Amino acid sequence: MTDKLAIAIAQIAPIVGDINGNVQRIRAARAEAAALGADIVIFCELVVAGYPPEDLVQKPAFQRACREAVETLAADTADGPAMIIGAPWTEGGALYNAAFFLSDGAIAANVYKVRLPNYGVFDEPRRFTPGPAYPTPIIFRGVNLGLMICEDMWLPGAGEALAAAGADIFIVPHGSPFRKTALEERLGAARARVKATGLPLILINQLAGQDEVLFEGASFVMDADGEVRRRAPQFHECIALTQWRRQDERWVCESGPDEDWITGEEMVYRAVTMAVRDYVEKNRFKGVVIGLSGGIDSALTAAIAVDALGADRVHCVMMPSRYTSRESLDDAEECAKNLGVSYRVIDIEPGVAAFDTMLAPAFHNLEKDTTEENIQSRLRGVILMALSNKFGDMVLTTGNKSEMSVGYATLYGDMNGGYNPLKDVYKTEIFDLCRWRNAHHATDMRGPDGAVIPARIISKPPSAELREDQKDQDSLPPYEILDVILECLVEAEMSVGDIVAKGFEEETVRRIEHLLYVAEYKRRQAPPGPKVTAVNFGRDRRYPITHGWRDR
Image (cartoon, rainbow, N blue to C red):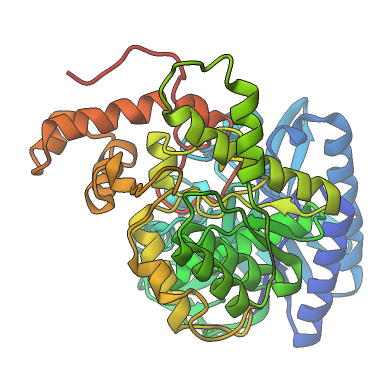
């Protein structure tokens, strides 16, 4: 029995499916923790496979590779600190989300996740079998470690069972995704288990951008009174030692990482920046190409891309038409210069004229309408994809959640691209993020310091500039109104009547509800983008394209 224990937090960034690479990452983290004097090194949920593995985990070859990796890592512990790692595991014909205690060169114990989440971005019952029973403590040097996996901490049951069986410290490997409210919710769930049992807790969260889902790290230690005592950073890898001591039959964490956590616009900005960096680099793109229009969405997208990848990997293109204002031309050029990116101008008017000629017989005697506007947008999409094909850079899409909600975007035009950083960011927050970026910088942001987004881009009324004197508010309510209505409809699933009761015009609310529903077919064809809000399109909100429901 010991009265001291050194537990290392290994907040690393596994890559889904890269089992050999993840094994090397685990080994490197363990070696660093061993040099710090760790007795145990703890990793996040399913660290061997990466999380979420989705249907990859159903492939028998993938399952075998994960098993072999766990056995290999177990052998590593013969000469050093023990490890707690997560991996998918087949046993008796069932597939489990498992965590393993590796010690003395062997798999000393394992735990199967009991509560499998089936909401929001989660779909674990589709793939895993629930653990047959709540876990019992793992004994290491006389200390009873209460190991529970992610969701088992969030609900009553596993924690209380472990406490009743004599656990001393909760250890919780996590794969808890980012959204603006996730950190507080995570702390609330941990505090509920701590308060119910009187036991301290150490939570290790994944760090990664994985398609639409982000994991910001922010691992922590919570004491038996529900206070957070130690904090690992957000959006950074971290191998940190926590020192624990037995005091009056209770275990207390005496030292560990002490990072400040960020909130608000900085948290969202850093999250989407990490998302872009991981998506581009994990999918091995040389860089990105962006249509820089002189508007606020493309300017913010360019700033995020430069901060994620560096200016040398970001290529911007202004594609003016007869409706493009002098101000937009100047603003786009100034923004590109501020960011230090390559910048070119490709005039779309020759293409517009060619399409006018080609379609003249079919459109004879018909008035111009959104058809001609969409041709301009689609020409720009063709140009961006041609540059992507020729030079190997991925197109970053620049639309925001407000536009995607109501279909204020053109299929095969401004919706073209491989990834959309702002897909889950409402238009009103775009302005806030621009102002934050102009006033702040950080060492891990690869772009220049200072006000990189010209002030006029932020202050001028938004416009697609597809016809003379066009403004977004010609087609939509002011974004200050639109975004609140959309949050009520999308995030809160409120009825029209309840939204009207908040002070909005019924005709406006019904029109926005209609636009939201009929734009579903567009969203199905949109590129992926990082989840930021409580309910994103795709993983969280899965509505049918064809349906007849309208709130009456």
